[in-house]
Length: 257
Image (cartoon, rainbow, N blue to C red; front, side, top):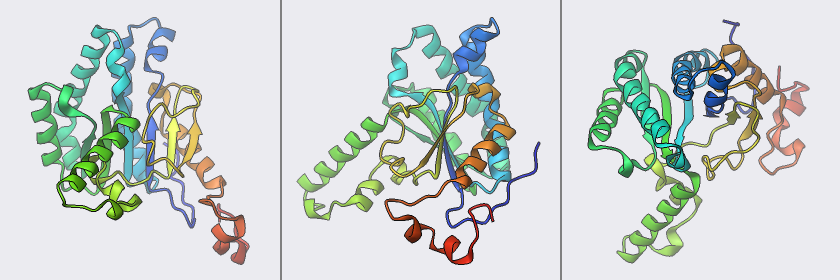
């Protein structure tokens, strides 16, 4: 593994979100069945978490299964749900021992009671971790926003909130799991350049990076290339360059200093 990147920046990279794309194409390229690609994708997660932690990242959010993925062939959907269950069973103790806190983000109503219990047990087992892994499963950004709006409307109707109380901070608190912190960087593999209904609220000012390799090939070196790209950019958040990077301009240092 390459040496971790050490960079002083006014916007340190702490949260990376990843759209894990290309499992089926990776398998097809090798003459294998699609589920084999998904299995390889699951195996990639462990190395990604290790590489992220080595580079000072403390939160990784993975788009594992979108709300639209239910429309895929039944055999593939069943295989994905089976892989999800297997991952939780296989990795729960390792995540706990590695101090990784697992949170599953998404609509759980379509899951079996057995899978719901498994999710709850794994979240409880890993609750004290200091590194966070968010797995977005049966998740959609529009669904998350709409569900939050419904919840807030109900709170107003019940008299527990006034409509004038609702602002961006409150809205964020009512989103899934109390609101996922905004990712600094969102990576999508397999060369596709769209976010596909992923974290629509949270990605408002995230840097976007599109990797050409398929997810099963996205190794520690590929992550470091993405990190280097992140630190090469100026994050202005709607401000002028001289306002957003005043510390760099005053010292004459670049983002790589």
